[in-house]
Amino acid sequence: MTFSEENYLKSIYHLTAALETEVSTNAIAEIMETKASSVTDMLKKLAEKDLVNYKKYQGVSLTENGKLAAKMIVRKHRLWEVFLVEKLNFSWDEVHDIAEQLEHIKSEQLINRLDDFLGNPTEDPHGDPIPDANGRIIKIEKHLLSELSDNQNGVCVGVKDTSSEFLKYLDKQGIALGSKIEFVSKESFDLSVKIKVDERELSISNKIASNLFVKLV
Image 1: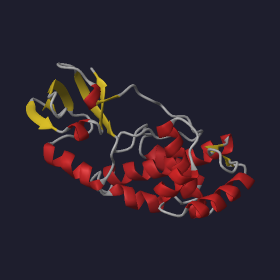
Image 2: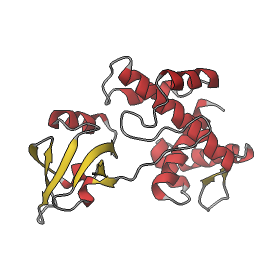
Image 3: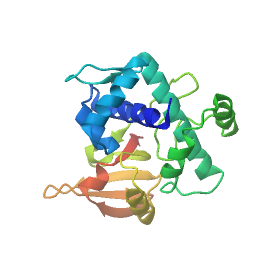
Image 4: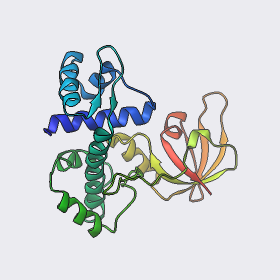
């Protein structure tokens, strides 16, 4: 596959995972920042390779071959992010764009050795699951912080928004993967949330709380 074909597969994979349904060409065009006509041309190519199910004016979905191919791209991306953070001391807000380039490396042997070298991690630096060499994913039960009730306790296990700006904000607030978070209360007026992070009390907006995943403890 070309780099462009891989990027389309990955985007469709993320869209179908988020929406849990078939996706439209317009949704793909938006995430790929291109014209719908260009998306249609690419979908025809991917359909010829048995990577997507595509019919004009209907939703698009990945075939089994397409799902596995997309998972392998995601696997490479997330393993490289782990490597960049753990071995090269990049911060979690710096690694996405670099991993976007590294994910197109073709060598399966290299990626499997990288996986072993890193100790076969199951999550990337943002808490997203890493598919194994067979495409299997270990999922954990997690909740958005905004969905918790008063006095519930959790551990930060991931972020919904992986933008550099959001991650830098979390760094300023001392919130990271593994942080212990106690949900103190929610303000009915603007849905802002009062929390305790490792015994420090903070007030955060509903937007922030809606982009943090926690595992209840």
